[in-house]
Every structure is written in C-alpha cells, then in structure tokens.
Length: 150
Image (cartoon, rainbow, N blue to C red; front, side, top):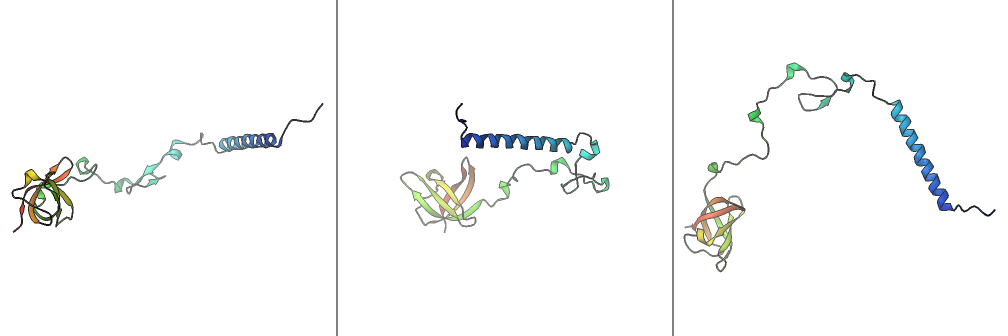
C-alpha cells in the first residue's frame, strides 16, 4: 500500500462541507423549536392604527376617521394653467436667426423658455428685454407672441 492521496486542500474542503452540514442541522433544529404552527389567529394578526403604524392590538373604533375617495390624490398635483399669469417679461439669452430659434430667461421664474422665429411679432436679438406669453408644448413651455419690451 502506498501513501494516502489526500492533500491539504481536500481536507479543508471536507471540513467546510462538514461545517455546512452541521450549521444546516442546527438551523433545522432551531426552526423546529421555534415553530409557530400552534399559534392562534389572533396571535398572528397585525393591525394598523389611526396613524398608519403596525400594532398587535386592534384599533379603537372611536378614533376611526372617515376619508372620502375624492380627497385621495394619486400622483403629482395638477397645475391650474388658467390661474398662471399669462403675460411675462424676460431677457433673450440666446437667439440664432439662421436656425430660427432661441431661449428667453423668464425674469419671474428664472427658467429658460424656448422661442421659435414664427412666434415673434418683431425681430429680436440677444440681451433684448421682451414681453411674451407662454403655452405648453410637447417638450415644455414655449414663448408665443413675443415682442420687445418698451
């Protein structure tokens, strides 16, 4: 007979395998000892109180709040466009006459609003102060009826 062909690596692998098996058995025994199959329905029930917190006690019916379905808002609030001021003032920050478009910096909201050459009532150039109205376009707000401010 010759020497054993077991190497150090094989022994380590076998030790790891035995450790995994032992851990698995321990977890199995722990699950058996902490079994929740014998609990009643009341022990397994969870409730939500009037503030939305999960509790083990049923909520007090005297604290019940009625909520209308119409009062529940899903998503972001809708902006009433009719309530917005329609005539605005701004400064032309960029305008390319060759391509026919530019941007106006709104003085009230400081946002950049797109303007097309077809929406101009008179020619404009960069750094001009303008008066305009806004309309909702497919990619955001567009300036319409743009004219130089007096």
